[in-house]
Length: 204
Image (cartoon, rainbow, N blue to C red; front, side):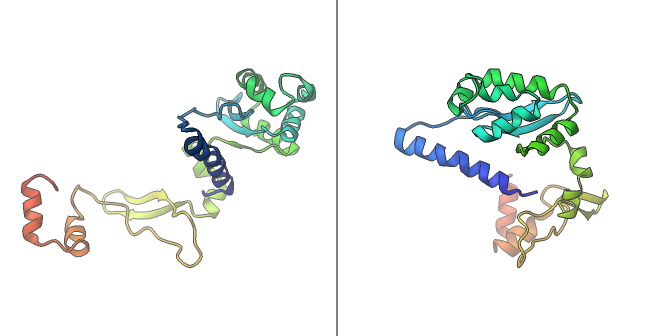
C-alpha cells in the first residue's frame, strides 16, 4: 500500500543525504531502524511481542507522546526537551519508550498514541496484511490463476493510476525459460538460430 508518509520519509532522508555528499563529501551509510540524532523515531517492541513504529522527534509531537505514556514530565526533562537533547540521548530515550510499549499490547499502544495525535503504526506481519481491511479495499492482495497451484494470491499493482491502473497478466512461469520464445523472438526480434546459439553456450 502506497502511503504519502512513505514518500515523505524517503524525501526527508534524501534532503539531508544529498547535501551531505555533494557539499561535504560524506556518504551516509545504513543505520538500521533509526536516523542518528533524530529521536524518537524508531520501532518498539510491545507486550504481545510485536512492534510499532513511532515518529515523535518534533518538540510538540514529543510532548504529546509523553502524555500518551503517562509521563508528561519527560517533555521538560533536560535530556529530552529539545531536538538536540533527544538526539544526544537517543539510545536512552528509545529504551525508556520501549519500557512503556512493552507494558501494553500493540493495539492499546496505538490507541493511546492515536488519541494524542502521535504518528505511529503497526509493523505488519503477513497475517496482519491479509486481515487489514485497507489492503483489501485497495486490492493490494489479488488472486490470479496458476496452471499448477490454482488460485494464487499476489501483491496488487502500485501505484494505482486512474488512466493506466495496470494489471497482473499471469502468476509467472511454471519452469525456467518457459517464456524465452515470447521474449527473445517476439519482443527482441532474435532469430531461432541466434536463440539456439545462446542455448548451446548456456547463456539461456
